[in-house]
Length: 220
Image (cartoon, rainbow, N blue to C red; front, side):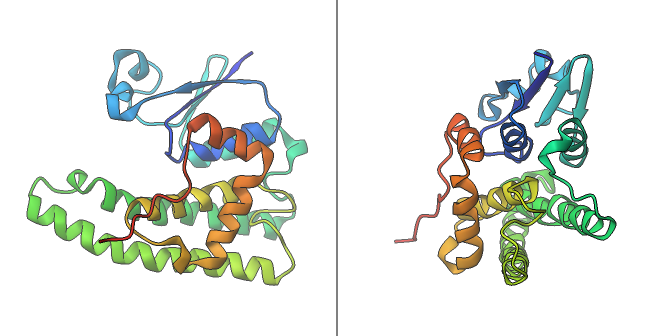
């Protein structure tokens, strides 16, 4: 066994985690418990000095960043067809993945980790409040993408099979529920996320991470 995936339960590491399961890959999953600070332990820093998950190790090669991992896993398991080969379809895939990774994902970070952007509690509260409004808009845009995809007769966001875009969409919506956003307000996106979670390979990754899809709790 040469592949090893360092993941944190509930993090964006679900994307490569699901991909490896979908590919039928033999790999060693290594849970990194962020709430216990394991990502800052000397052992993990020796793997990734940036103290971030996910990390994909293939023998002596260490790969970080979701974008890089998606490309690497796709190339390593080409039969899985994660990234379309047609030029325009491939471009649209990368366009969507980049938007999820560099726009939607950081918006949630401003909600979940406002202390990363200010040490002033009042400013942190303002950052979180503003980012939550932005995140609702971005989830609406993500739902529109799902709706257009289905209207075009396609079941999955990135190709003919469930893949990384679907796993990322599930993750982003799940994070929204953690931030107090009711997934029922995004019915098409919520249905797509639940359908993604029912794919056996994705379900295995979800079970290993012990994830609950809907963390929304209505206010009293």
